[in-house]
Image 1 (cartoon, rainbow, N blue to C red):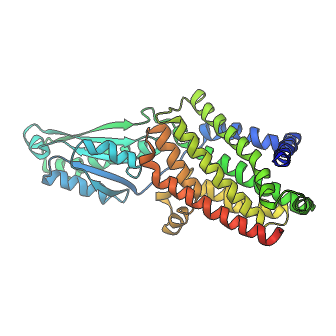
Image 2 (image 1 turned 120 degrees about the vertical axis):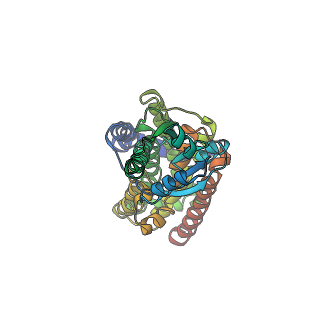
Image 3 (image 1 turned 90 degrees about the vertical axis):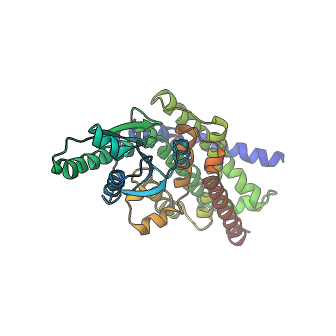
Length: 368
C-alpha cells in the first residue's frame, strides 16, 4: 500500500512540474466560464409545452390549435390542475405552460376581454424569452385574424410569467454546459493523453514489471485527475455563484456527488481511449472527435437538441454530457432532488460501468 501511495504522490509531482498541464487544468476553466457566460447566444424550435385549459370552449381550442400548428411547439401534456404545473416543470421536458382562465369564451363575449397566462421555464433564459414571445405573437395573430375580422371589440391579454430565472440571464444555461465541457476535457482527455504518453515513451511497460499490478498503476495515474477535476468543479460553482450570481436552489451535497459521478464516468472513458491509443497524438485526435466536439454540439450546451435533425437527436442520447447538464440545471436552478434526476443518474452509472469494463478488458489484453 505504501508503494501505491508513493506512486500517486509521484503522479501529483509530475503534473505540478508541467506548467502547460497546470495552465490547462486551472487556466482553461476560468477563461471558458467567463467567455461562454458573456458571449454565446442561441435559438430553438419544436418546444414541448403543456396546456391547462380551465374553460375547454371553442375559442380556447382554436387558440390551442393555432399554437400547436405553428410548427414551433409540441404538446407534451394536457394538465388538469394548477398543482401539476410545478411538477411538469421539475421533470425537465416541458419549457412552457399555457393556462386559459375559466369561462374564457363567455368573458370574451360579455366583457370583451379574456386572459391567457404563459408560464415559461427560464432555466434556459434564451429559450424562455423566445418561447414566451412566440406564443404571445401567435395569440395576437389569432386575435387580429379571427376576431377583428368579425368587427368584434374583443381583446385577449397574454400574461407572461417567468420561472426560475426571472431576469433571463444567459449564464444560467452556459454554466452547466461549461462545467460539463471542462470536466470532460480535464478528466477524460488529460487521462487518456497521460497514459498514452507512458505507452509512447515505453515507461508503461517499466511500470507494469514493478511490484504493483496493472490496475493499481492505472488507478494511481487517474487519482490525481479525480482530485483536480473535482477542484475544477468547485471553482466553477464558486465562480458561477460569486461572479454571475447563479442560484443554488437544491442540495449542494447532491450536486457534488453527481459531479463526482460524472468525473468517474469521464475518467473511465479516458482510460478506454488510452487503451486503444499507442501515442499522445492518437489519444488527442480521438478525444477531440469523441469528446470535445460532441460535448459542445450534441449535448444541448450551445445548440438546442430539439432543433437538430432526428439522426443527431438520436445520437445525442449517447452523449454523457447531455445528462449531466440536465442534472446540474435541475439541482442548481430548479432545486430538484434525486427523485427528479434519478434516470439521468442511472444512465451515467451505466455508462461508467460499461466504459470501465471495456477499459479493464483492453488493458489486460494489450499491456499484461
